[in-house]
Image (cartoon, rainbow, N blue to C red; front, top):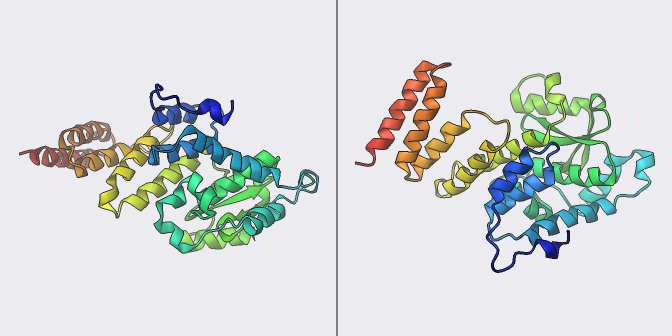
Length: 285
């Protein structure tokens, strides 16, 4: 279907991006790029399907620039670093952590800047379309990409423009982020759902110190809750956000519902949550 076919006619209802997100997240093979672009559409309702298709086409264009011979040479890391890191200028800087745009794929494609995980998504999607055996690796505190057999640790850091990483580099990165040694469980390729959950966590982390952007934190939590696998505590986080935004009754009700879940595992915390729910209801008086 062409981009024009996706254009809305004046009589068409606006697309339900959250429903589309939920359906894609529960697909047998979720499309990572589509999930990321649907996050963009929720963040900016002015984005049209034409805009989203345009971002997808840009990924196709970049994939078409990867030398075909790479399928035979296997030099994916080197060719992608030359294309994306050098020629196209995809990389990150510390200031990117202070920008919401750094977590939105369409903006990352436009600015050539973003958080490590979004730059990795660009690398993964371009590499996958070009035929590379690529995967994402969600190390503590930093996201990178790998090629071939995960046991070989043939890694690159898109945030650093595609700098090659060794297993020792990965160990140092984990040690600096956690103070602990690299555990083999950290080397499992990340599934699309886990990648998207981490992106949404980054968006919430951006919004948390900005109370005036609690709307961003709320939609990020709402989308995370639509993923097949997510932390149960997100329901309490959503309740707190509702209270923060002045919806005391709904927030209190959701706190109480979460307290019922907690009764079986942590009665003391459940009691504290009920107390907060009562305090939220009291703010109506």
